[in-house]
Image: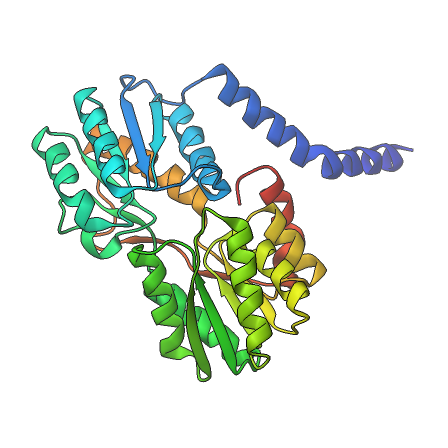
Length: 324
């Protein structure tokens, strides 16, 4: 009888443990309990995100969780136009924040703003994009994936899958990281790869552009999108064009995990955005508290990780809670 009771108890723990842990995490975040007794510093994150980009929701989830732990007041703002993003950095400087986290998707437009932050004595961490410019601009470190290396991983994966002709879909012109991804893929891909530029803020345009290319070139057997929200659109374009091309993507979210699981997507390149947000806040706190700097002058890499159907089931649960 004791064995039966213990067995039932273990079954109960295994089936509810994840939910209990998640409930505890939400409760801790809601109550704002810190794990440290350092001053309540204010950190601002300013990104190049457009409206409705779910990738940045995951980054924010990580940043907010670290902020709770580190007793940080976390501020977030974004703009997909570089000049406006730079102005948001200036606004954070005027607020005399204690640390700034910023993306460098269009580094030339952001250089002066980062310099102004450093001149004001505000430590800066770059995240997600701008790994090559981060050190030059005076940031403490960069957290993200090396986009060229990530692209090379895509080319290798396409080779393993026997693909011969691929389309790389760039949804934000001028984003150096996107160019690096496609160039990296071309470098290692043994087949032919062409770029397709689309207007990422207009999903119907994205779908029609991909569909038209697939209709005009039936030899295309792989389409690579550079963001999770565009993968589902590419699947619809494939269906509209009656194409047999495999759809692959950079980045992971709940819908992408489901697509991998169902087989509508071939693979995804996960750069772990939750980790980018979490580590950015944590590293700024470590610098303020103990003058710690990670990376030794090199980027702290969070990717790439190639995710396929084999891992999709496990990661789907994490994606549903907004952490992958």
